[in-house]
Image 1: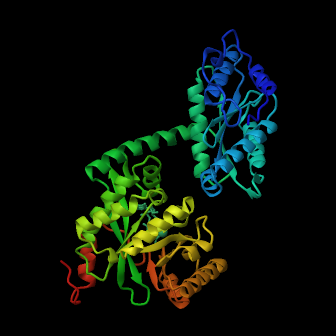
Image 2 (image 1 turned 180 degrees about the vertical axis):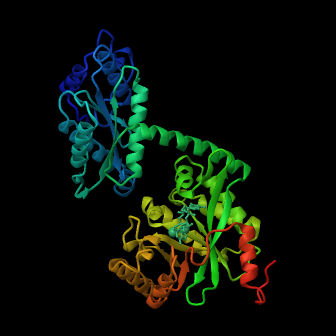
Length: 460
Ligand code: C2E
Ligand code: MG
Ligand code: MG
């Protein structure tokens, strides 16, 4: 069903009337999206190019916005493809109805719509229009007898000077949308110069990281996880460390998300797990190795096999390996994550829920998924001494894990008093600078030799 009437489309074409040049459609290009009846991305490029031409003599600004539906894929998977198509058609209708007659609404592809706003001259106005669109799109969608809810994020850019091409303007809006998506759901971002610098840094990190993975220059470091009562190490978490010759030290909080987005996380993770299990092989046998998996690895069904093949090669006992996953990781595709978790657990690998309390998951995940351990996020632990709500939350998590038969580790312990308070609450495990910062494999081995000197365990 085409939702956009012929007359409305004619109106759109008139909004930025062709100047002498025929529209591409008449030259044989398809400019219409068959699902929604809106113009497609080719039409959007064409309309932007024409408006830039129009404004050549009088370079008044105008805005474009790219609207991305948040969480469309899970809804598509949950309700089915036809329902997904229905939602896109309803979204198209809403956007079309919400915009004035000067604007052009197109389907940009997948779950994205692009909007040309010739009468929007400033950032603030672009934000206001976008806020109105996110509002309109957040109302429930009819899907058969049920209703689905989703939100939308918007990235905008403003045409400021005659030098800008449609490609540049659209790239900027896409960059802004990318930033919006990395914030919370329903965010609106207008492109700025700082984003350009951030985008360039991301590209340099990506390129340098690709080289570092190929040459094996990302190193596993290890941070002790201790039994809070005895203060003895029970295992180590592997944390990636990378110093590039040009960029210097790059934090994993910066390069891991880039590795995920640019498709490098698989090879990076395999390289790290090989090195980490080789190092951990030399530790006393009762110590486990905890390894972080990224959300995107939980939607890739090869992940389990790749982990097993590395363990096979290095001879590391799967029962000594723990995999840390986050609530967000479980959220993006619960069915896929559950299959991977089940496969890993079937060979004796233990699975922890990392950074608990900060993600978007619901408590029902703890019922549906079988976790062996839960790690309480540093955000709660660091304020446990002076913030009553944090204390209550930590106590409730510990009690819940006790009931569920799940081990608990408190992350980010920096002070002795925090550790003591956690012991009082019945927390079994702890991790943090109080017990040790992440160290390379040689220093970790040195630490273990000292810690277990004279003990019966053999350290090779
Ligand atoms: P995470 O898995 O929650 O790791 C704990 C982070 O907290 C680490 O930061 C660690 O250095 C830091 N930390 C530990 N104790 C303390 C403390 O007492 N105080 C403070 N302020 N911080 C503490 P790091 O190494 O910068 O890693 C950040 C995040 O990057 C990790 O959070 C994890 O999500 C990710 N990451 C690191 N290595 C890998 C990896 O190999 N693969 C994947 N997928 N993610 C990784
Ligand atoms: Mg972790
Ligand atoms: Mg953590």
